[in-house]
Amino acid sequence: MICLLTAVCSLAAMAAEPAPLPPHEASYEVLRHGKKVGELTVSLEQLDNGVWHYRSDTHATAWWVRALNMSAEEAAHFTWRGDRIVMLTYHHAQHAPANNRYFQHRTDWDAGTTEVRTEKGTQIIELVDNMVDPLSLRLQLAVNLADESRRRDTQEFTLLDRDEVKQKQYTFDGEETLELPAGCFETVRIRRIENPGSDKHNLSWHASDFHWMPVRILRQEDGKDKLDIRLLSTDLPLDGC
Image (cartoon, rainbow, N blue to C red; front, side, top):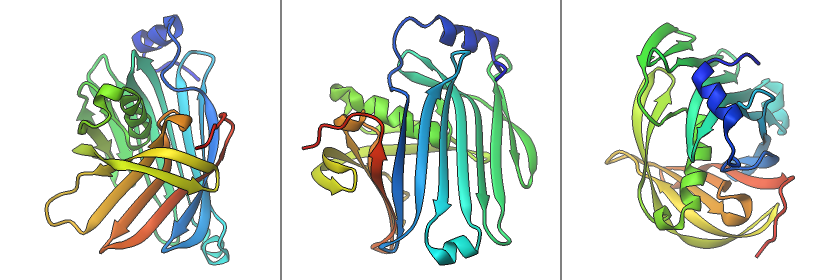
């Protein structure tokens, strides 16, 4: 993998401190309206050039979803600057009948811009400090939650979502013991702050046992569970409750 940004890649190669999150693999079950429809696998690894690669793949397990040949994949390259992610590239592809969508970007921090491509075309968007893509936001939130002094604070992110720059906020919503396929977890529940009047709710549960990465993600609409993602397994050691 060729370094996309010499200064950032040099920073990664020269970094003496360990990364805030360990390399790992994990799998989740995906439930839609309470029924399992697929599985999601994630992997985080450091490449030989010091750049980190985070990948997420979703594949169908329900026969009717497999028959429609539906799948999704995401991948991000980034480096760490202390406890902050510096994004480099991002790719998202969603495959469904008559609805194939993709979004990718490639940053140029020297120029202060990123080239964004979607199925609708290409455009240049200005970068801002600490900007994250949808995939690296998940990791950055985990790192923020690892700081006990910040855990109950509202977390604010500048998100590059397709060809739009959005401000997203996540806030502490309580503590909860969860029994999941991967085991028992003492968790902190985080709620995404939605626009006034929205009927959507996005919750995630994070455990110190899993380095504050999500062990469960729940999306609700009109008070009903729409998408429920639960940790099945990981190669990281888990202590349980």
